[in-house]
Image: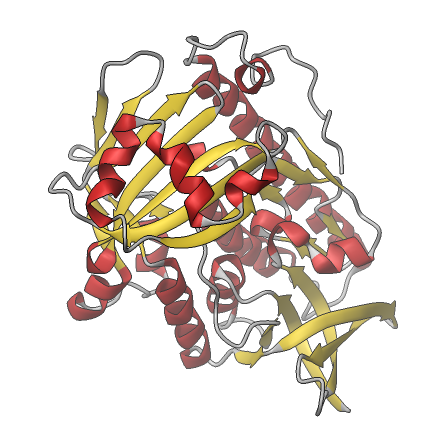
Amino acid sequence: MNNYKTEILIIGGGIAGCIAAISLADSFKVTVVDKLALPADKVGESLAPAAQRILNKLQLLPDEETQKSLFINNLGMQSYWGNDSVQIVDHLRNPDGFSKSLDRKKFEVYLRDKAIEKGVTCCWGLRFFNSIFEDNLWKVTCKSDDLKNRTTTIFNADFVIDATGRSAHFAKSLQIKRTSLDALISCWITLPNKEENAMSTIVSDENGWWYTAVLPNNQRVLSYQTDADLFEKSIFKNIDSFLELIKKNKRIYSYVEKAIDQLQFHGTVSANSTKLDKVAGKQWLVLGDAAISFDPLSSQGMFNAMACAMQVTELLKHFNFIKEYDIAKVYRFSEVYTSQINSIWKHYVKHKDLFYGAESRWKDAIFWKRRQVGVLKNEFAL
């Protein structure tokens, strides 16, 4: 059994966890653990222009050659939403420049490497098992996934950050529940890009909406967002059944038909709007999707995770209870962070309702009726 002492333990080595680790590393002894030895492929690649401020502040903007493999400029969005005419929103006048379309997996590998360069202790392939709070310390037990030679590691931490995504493993172990506003899922594929137009595209239909964007290395992501109960599950089980759904939308099928034999099916993931009922407690907090997860229509998930990670750093420095323990400051920190997350959530829900409310062609369809302002929320409490 291995035993380590750290000031801040971050569970989860994705974007939220790594940005938090990198921003905290100059002031605290930081350790990051993640169950995956390497990041997995994920849908969700749009990085808002304002995220470049954070990357610049943390000196994370890569050199020109590395940039080519990590992300490309996204010139803007063309949408068929509310009517059949195309609407275009470009980023030419955005003071932060273009949004970025990422190779999500490579970007997370890049952030992991930068965390190590900053002196963060990184432990990959360790899965959170349980935790105990005693003597003002969290004793967090993690175990390796190697069943033949499984090792156990205990981390003694002054503070724990749960950045394990929607699953929120640490918070869930504390019996904290998550509330969902809907049951949105996203089924996605990747394929070679055969189109000259590099703008992202959104197309709504009766049961949800389609999204496609160009990725680095001339790849394309294409996904469909709908509620889990509106289709037979078999439709989202393999590429053949999903392709039949794609063919029903001529505009979307046009992106696929030239690469019909090169489609890579990635399956279905949760894409619903959720909030953890409690986002901070005694010497712990949840960060990123573990705290609040956004509908991909917002294109704000990754930026929110990064921005909140920076806020956490400022709060921990301000209250300084890790270096000089003060229970009053611990509770005050929790109150302030909770207030910040609640404010972000309120703002997000308001704008989410506005965006969905702009599509009025299928008012009587179940998918869209569920998203009308005034419809009872929390019907999908988990």
